[in-house]
Image (cartoon, rainbow, N blue to C red; front, top):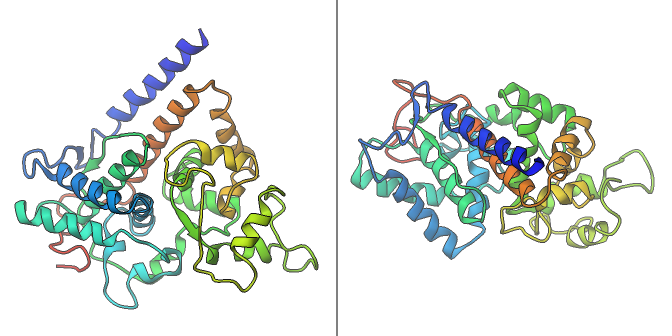
Length: 330
């Protein structure tokens, strides 16, 4: 009875996810079916080639989508390179990659469907394909976004930060129309990829600046702390990379949530999810199910959250433009 009920619940989520936003304003599934029928397969081919050469590109493309949507909406503004004032130069965007892959896909699309497919949609499609190629869930992407005409470094101030309190993280997500559950699931995207010691300094060496002899975040599992400190010592190289999901950084899986539960979160913002009653209950809910139901529920919910994120602040219709080159306005 429990298994039947759980499967029905997961099926219901899939059905609801499909029908919500089948046409979100002027967004739609397979928006380019008539105007550029091979658009999605062209993007997939570029992403496949990139990940085959360098598996870390999967995480880079997923992160690029998140960073694009949280500033000015999902409009490709993160791709613009208009000098020192461009959005991509902001501190929260340090280390972003994947720009070359987006431009390659755009060039191929322009050669067959000039002026049709937006850079914003390429980012969303590439993130979807990257997740699937990293062993994650497949999901449909709403397309029909248009590219924004604004890219300003100052607008990135509202980006979630690794050292934000859980209250501030929730507030930033609420502002975008996202929930605590979305916060957990989109943070779980850290299941693939790495971070730099630059983002670990406060958590490892200055968590309690006013307490002598106490420097690290007490939520870090004591068996995990020495390894982190060895990788990112005081005054060490801030560019050293470390996996955000210890043990499976190239596989998209639920292991990230288990690590957060057990004190093995790498990023402070991930660890904070286990401190808050609401976000902790979301994490725990996946482990109240027998495997593989917990994995299925996690994957369905992640897909729902990232599709929801992909609708933030979109430009459609006559808004914005369709760029010829993703790094510059027309």
